[in-house]
Image 1 (cartoon, helix red, strand yellow):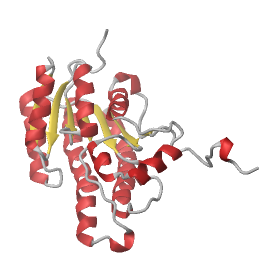
Image 2 (tube, helix red, strand yellow):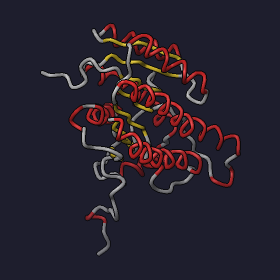
Image 3 (spheres, rainbow, N blue to C red):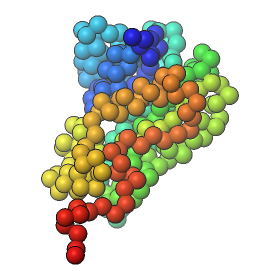
Amino acid sequence: MMRRLAGKVPLVTGGARGIGRAICRAFVREGAIVAVADLNREGAEAVAKELQDAGGKAMAIGVDVADPASVAAMVHAVIAAQGRLDILVNNAGVGGNTPFLETRLEDWNRIIGINLTGAFMVAQACAREMVRGGGGKIVNIASLSGQRGGNGRAAYGASKAGLELLTKVMAVELAEHNINVNNIAPGAIETEMAKFAHDRATRAAYSYLIPMTRYGTPEEIADAAVFLCSDESRYVHGHTLNVDGGFREAGLMFKRDAAPA
């Protein structure tokens, strides 16, 4: 069977765990030579070794996406090792769940600095290499929190809303360079972060409000990333693909047997 990313060189930030790790695994499965980048260098090395032990090709890079020098060094390392860069998945980010009136400026700046400014710097550095190489694919990992209001999501939601708009601008400006740019907006996904941050009440609410009545898996986000980074999506551009079990589109929902007479 033809592997959809055979010989391609993707860079995945935040690749040491969760959604990023699942994307790295899926890309290797599809024949790519993956650069696993993460603030946790040891975690990135562990994922790269796991992929290599399974017969894949991968390299590990430590990066702080909020540091311009670190971002430049990351991109240089990929080009030095592989000679080109075909795909970027801008996945690195941090969460936040603080009420608006209690959000401190330092917390706001940290979340915006990583999730939005960091994504901008990484995308810009990678896009410049893709322009030189004749094209490429960029997928930014946004969030449903950037599309709708939610308790405690002032900084996090604003960062992801900004990322969606940034993606649209990138799509408009980079089309002439043969660079496809799209978003994936995950809903509730069963990651290490969710296991830590979502209590029983939160899980019950999500399970009730999601039409598919369950959390998604990192692998389901990874499958969407493979599609958006393959030739199958060559005419998909400036789009946000919600992978959320129907959560964004759901309106009034109730159990019929519990409805009032």
